[in-house]
Amino acid sequence: MPFIPHTENDIRRMLDSIGVSSIDQLFDEIPAGLRSETMDRVPEALTEHEVSRLMSQRAARDGQPLCFIGAGAYEHHIPAAVWELTTRGEFYSAYTPYQAEASQGTLQLIYEFQSMMTALLDMEVANASLYDGASALAEAVLMAIRANRKSKARRILMPTAVHPAYRQTTHSIVNNQHIELVEVPYDEQGGHTAPERLAQHEGEDIAAVVIAQPNFFGVLEEVDALTDWAHANGALVIAVVNPVAMALLKPPGQWGEKGADIVVGEGQPLGVPLSSGGPYFGFMCSKQQYVRQMPGRIVGRTVDRDGRTGYTLTLQAREQHIRRSKATSNICTNQGLLVTAATIHMALLGGEGLRRVARASHANTRKLVAKLTGEHIRLRFDRPYFHEAVLSSALPLQRLLRPLYAHNLQPGYVLTEAYPELGESMLVCATETKSDADLELYRSHLERVIEKQTTAGCPVQPKMA
Image (cartoon, rainbow, N blue to C red; front, side):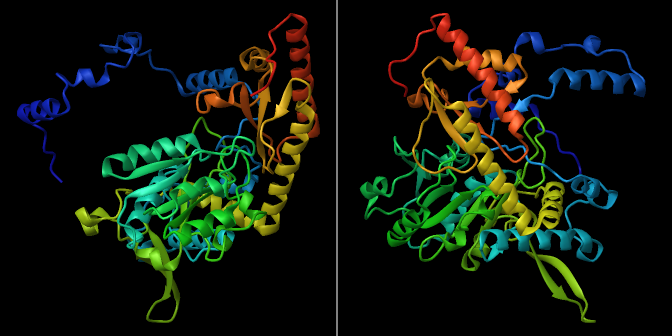
């Protein structure tokens, strides 16, 4: 394809359209101290040995903190075989399997992934992944608008107990497509989306209802009641789930009388390490009747003319190179390498292995909550939770947590910015990777800090939020 540059007139018209005077103005948020006008800041070339040593030193500065942060990214044990196999050349360098006859290994692996996800979630079809959990939710909203032909409104009920980043990402993607995300507040005592909160929308034209299980606070939702309410009111159900939790909890395909219609989530807990924010991958499943509205690729199994099993891209209706302006999505690729890791991870653990991981994670979080709560720290919500929970503090969290950071602890995710109404609260998580000694170390450090703060006269809230 030839390179066709923009003319000066093209550039001027685009800048005028968005209301800026120059291309440089588009990057004015970058601090001046980070800009380099010339190449004089580029260091002299280093040898391979010197580069390796430099990067090792920089990595060591990050340390190996004991992490109790969850909030959508979870530290699970990953068997060594997972990435030993994933990074083999035939997987590591494989790209999109457009040419089926030359991509049977990749296609079979994706088919196995789809089969595992439908089994785990009790759904009928799965695609070959999306970018991440947040964009998967946005795609599910768009899919629900297309699929619910009975609804004339472009309105989605979005509980505020859904992950804040997921809600923000979804808003960014669908807002300019004239889709309204109607917030449903969580219950102040339970931290869940009470079915009674939906009553005010009774009889309204709603295209879909989003249900997270567990929700962002780790709290378990009343999924049966919420699902049945949505279907009774002509809305589809979009489930947002943690795949590890699904090894223990009722799968979305069994929610209520009819089950969820679309299921999405983040696949990171399935064999993907914490890596400074990614890459991750999103998964999506749905009922068979909505398969042609599903974005992304779907791999199918068939037989060739000699009767041998073969795999091929069965549906890719969203592809721009096929449908162009009629494509259902602008998602142009799947996270194939991470799907490979997840498939190997699930194959190695099996159903019983995933259940053990889920049970151990839940048990460790209950132990952690028991160790940390007391006179100054309490559990914020009173409903069952999975492997993370919200704790509220009678003391300013900033003063409590700063010394813990210095002790190489990541004590939790502070909720002040996302949920200011919760006051001094944080989300804590403990997976199967945490030992009793880890939990006790956290408790002892926090206890000493609280004692110092109260002895020094640090103001205590009369009532915790």
